[in-house]
Length: 371
Image (cartoon, rainbow, N blue to C red; front, side, top):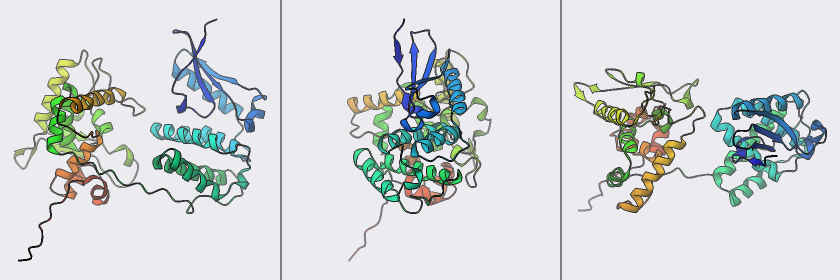
């Protein structure tokens, strides 16, 4: 019998899930190892096969179906283990993919620290403080804050599901203060990078600088978003369905003068024509016509190309400090004349977040003349 291969990436699944595959062309199989507090729901077995399929998506779908049918969600969760399982089953799958991924990582840390057999009603605020400080010390402030958000929502749902408790963290346990990123990319640094980057990054970067849009929006631009008069951008996903934030249109000509955007897009089209082997609906696509961002918001193709270009710039040019792709968005916001203009480019509802996070260029101040 072929040996089972454990596939990396299990952290994206609920705690206790394991994805395996038998051989190269065999089926994907998802197993579940229940915690002690939930073993009674699984006939006290050490490990249960949740689902299998020829494709990963089919195996995942079958696994969630079996898991949902086995776990009773009609009763209030009496233990932390039961609360964690119900939250992972009912709440996390309804969130955006990137949030799901983050929440499941938080759940993995939570289940490793807390006693899953502890009654929910006995959980106290000091445990949240202790956990926050532990993760801050051993992991990072960012991870600690993400976990605090999950804990807060967990117990809000526990109250909703009938647990008679006082919320142990809401308005009690604060997040750890994290300084906003302040890396400003100078014109010289950007020039060094452009000298070293590959053809794709070389046409992507000017469009990034001209529009100030985030990576996910740029990689989702379709050919029909380009009109004879300019480039359309939809409302940002973070503000979709919320007040504030609007769709934006960037013209090729403004008040009788070229904005330079058409020339930048023409350069992208030239690159596209040269490198794409098949037609694609997307402005930026792989050689096989696939978008460089998938439905889950992952951009592994782009990230690899950016990393290789940055490595080359660090090794072969005068660039002495790395910068991230997102720092270019801040450079655009910093280099335009006004915060109002920057906020419109970045599709912010007001200038508050623009000024606090994205306007990073040092301000020139004329010294006081004592004479």
